[in-house]
Image (cartoon, rainbow, N blue to C red; front, side, top):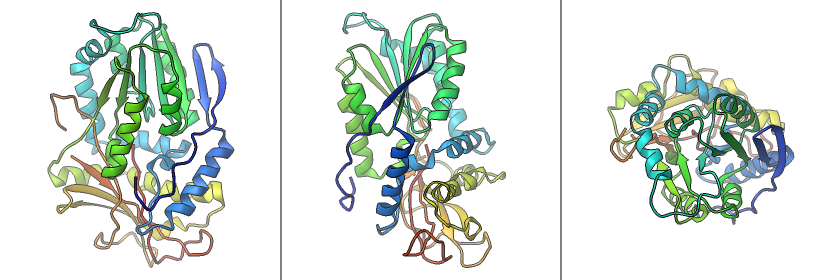
Amino acid sequence: MDDRRRSEPASPRLVETRPAPRLTLLCQPRQEQRQDLRAEVERGLSLSPKRLAPRFFYDEEGSRLFERITETPEYYPTRTEAALLRSFGAEIVEASFGGGAGPPAREAPALVELGSGSSAKTRLLLDAYGAARPLTYVPIDVSAEAVHSFGAALLRDYPALTIRGLVCDYRGAAEFLRAGPPGRRLFAFLGSSLGNYDLPDARDLLGLVRSAMGPHDRFLLGLDLKKDPALLHAAYNDAAGVTAAFNLNLLARINRELGGHFELDRFAHVAFYDEAAGASKCTCKACSARSSASTPSDAATASGAASACTPRTRTSTLRRTWTPCCRARGWRCSGSGRTAGTGSR
């Protein structure tokens, strides 16, 4: 991890609820989530460049906006990933849960998904597995609303499915999964997520996932490679402005939950292709006037986003940068100065 960071916090406390038959949620309490956000803002805005962990983009509103991003005509990664899963889902399921050496089948196999969101692409794997076959689905997400609502929809369509959702960060999820019963599990990291992290953090995250896996588990990782910069520019500058709203929602969340005073109309969404880094960067830049006009020349570099592919297919490393601003005292936006952060699923 970044050597400017403090030591890793303790894993979150998880409270179990059963909102519906076959649906169990283990959630970090909201007050503790808010405390984590405050600690991250205080820590991240003291760094240079300033940055915030990507998971904090996904409150209820952030999750809703991200689902809208995936539906925009310019945003190709979700459609490409879905096509890959339709084409190769049966092979993935067979490689994960098929024959060969493994533990006795006392427990139903499990699909563990990091950053599950709407679980839309998960349905393609569930279809390939078979709706009538017992399976435990373990969505990991920071939005309890998303896990509950999308989980309930899955249960209606897959009668043999059991859901055990983890509403917490990946560190807390890994600790829970390490203590789970043995059995075949497929860990899926889909939705353009690994590129949210710089290289050291990405390496640490993959190590964390590996520490939660058993000898018979499998890992499905999606990554996007370089493309025509014009395609990337369109994907992150959608005509409807949904990506811009998604990025600005992090400042709005700080306002809502921590009593911040960011003036959102003093920030502009800027997305551009950085040839030196070989990456498309999405930034939110402070403007001195109430105008969306800005240039990316002095945007600070943070982490990025990636899309999924099977081993047979490659689909661009996308980087996201966050450059809002705030005064040294409190959270009030001054319209000058910048902070950077990361985020997209």
